[in-house]
Length: 370
Length: 258
Ligand SMILES: Nc1ncnc2c1ncn2[C@@H]1O[C@H](COP(=O)(O)OP(=O)(O)OP(=O)(O)O)[C@@H](O)[C@H]1O
Ligand SMILES: [Mg+2]
Image 1 (cartoon, rainbow over the protein chains, first blue to last red):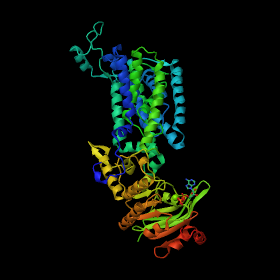
Image 2 (cartoon, rainbow over the protein chains, first blue to last red; image 1 turned 90 degrees about the vertical axis):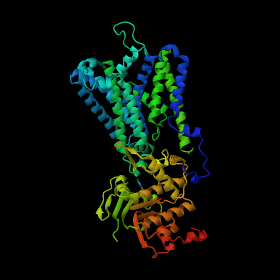
Image 3 (spheres, chains in turn yellow, blue; image 1 turned 60 degrees about the horizontal axis):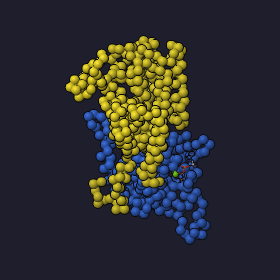
Image 4 (cartoon, rainbow over the protein chains, first blue to last red; image 1 turned 90 degrees about the horizontal axis):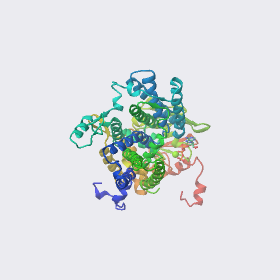
């Protein structure tokens, strides 16, 4: 406020702390600091914080981020997509079917896969807005339908549930490196040559740096986070996303095309899942029918840790990205620290509960204890 | 003078409920037209057919002499009709300025890309709210933290700002204090003088008499009667609003305070 003379004298200036409290990202920021402090103290020597270790948990975090951005915008728009994990498996399998089994050029396989998956997203959205059913139920149905096809199709055409040979099929393709490639190779080589990062000292990779580039997966994650954040906070469409999730009826009265906004968000979620899937099959070189299992919940948990309300209308893409970072660091950190990996699930459950409780409290702060 | 909106034989059925059973009213520019009637008479349903929320089951709507088809509130807003709904249509989790411009976000172009102009939105919101006699803590204050009357004022200020031709107010003063009510009535008077057609729904005869040029009473989904200012006394109007029943007996027992 600039014009202090017109402020209502009855309104106490909000304390800085309280003001910071009602930022959706707060929980995520605190969590990131806590998680890094913990692992720096207890797992510093485990290799987690050398070049390779950092690249390892960054990559895992980036995977979570890609699907969290979609889930975040969709949740703020007031809906869920439980079919994200199945969509990942399905998209990967489609790439394999088109690109390997049918032998089409990889770029065509990728584009068609995107088109099919985004169409499924649109269908999810269309059914939700037209029937008024909870998206929870509609996308639960999609979860089973897509997973079923993902198992059925390769079994029928190839009599197996894993199809390999994707990396070979993508050789020389112009589009595939956008998902499976790496950038900055020469920079890392130069860093290695100058001894600033470690290089392999023997074997046929001798002299090459241990990190030979930043995977496109990470670039996608950063780009999607920036894109999502700007759309949400700085555009007209972003205001419509908040409005659609905050109160769909009120938004409609004010002229917001609520149905179109929701359908677009389902399509965007499907897009994010497909990006994840394409990066994954390019990295693994194969598509498996069980890929992406439980990813929908991991995405939703990352979003909730990031401060979004499950009821819609409130949240932050930056928060969701921080949630994904916490996820990646803890999952890989426990691995580096040689902790039994099943404990990761215990951690997930606990942090989810804490995040939801904190968010409910923050919601009361924003709406003035009403 | 040509009416800006003509509502001809509007009927609205919700399943087996007949909310409107043929209402015909003309609205003129520069006039404040009061819609009156008991609870459940169909006033809100009627204005919602004007603002594009409901499609009439039967009947015709003419806007500026042409038949109009409003499939969505978006269309009516684009035509210059702004509405304050009885249930306000505010989103508690969103800031005042985001609510104020919801559906009409100001755009600022940066490098050819279209962005939400938050500075402009904040400035206008603060100014318009101050004009209505409410000092906000800031434009980023969430609507959920406002009092009922303050929320109503935001909704009114928003409608006044965007109602280029027609301003529809569905019981806008129900939660307002004396000063804010006076402000709203003065605002109605001001925009009417600018040639805007105001549709004003109220249960308060004194408010209606203060700003109304024309009065239409609805009763059980039908037009019960229409009168011009000066043709009718407050007492007669009050009796009409109660569906023609004499309020005298009740009034007597309450000492004339109703
Ligand atoms: N969406 C709906 N579905 C079914 N019935 C409805 C619907 N909307 C309104 N009605 C019915 O139509 C009738 C008229 O309602 P309306 O809200 O228009 O009354 P009103 O004159 O605005 O009353 P009030 O003065 O209490 O605001 C009521 O009987 C109501 O129950
Ligand atoms: Mg009403």
